[in-house]
Length: 179
Image 1 (cartoon, helix red, strand yellow):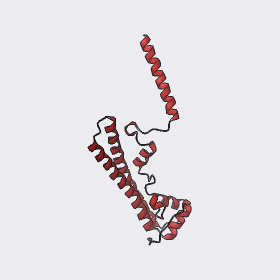
Image 2 (image 1 turned 180 degrees about the vertical axis):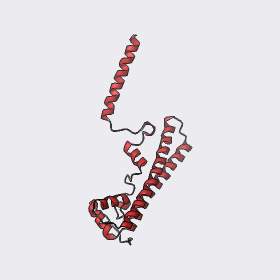
Image 3 (image 1 turned 60 degrees about the vertical axis):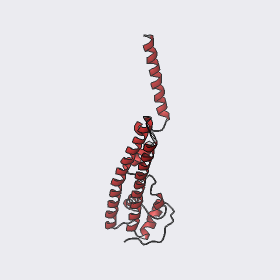
Image 4 (image 1 turned 135 degrees about the horizontal axis):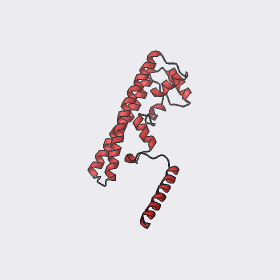
């Protein structure tokens, strides 16, 4: 009887301290991928940019989602053909990015599971990290390619208006733009 009341007291204390700890800590990732934040997991799962195309964005190559947002806000004018092409670019990029993001999440879960189980071997580690690196490179390429294609559809004037709308200073190289 005494043992069960001690056990109940300990459980109550542990549950109470766990709840208090959860209130103070930022949102944690699901237990199968503790090495990634909730934001990273969400970004990978949803095909978000996560800054992967920043070299393009900062150098005069806008991304399709932001250009479409600027057009919807009336800040830049797009021709109907441009809008349709940008919507296709964005949709294709999103599908590819979501698929790659899920593959990265699966590989990250596998990597973490190996460590958690205490059975990570050197050969497995190298292969798994390289696999994750290849998928992350493919994801970045997907986002950068969408920026390259987007800029190719826009005039220099449209790109200039876009960056004025975004309030971003760019180093915009002289290059031929579409339309």
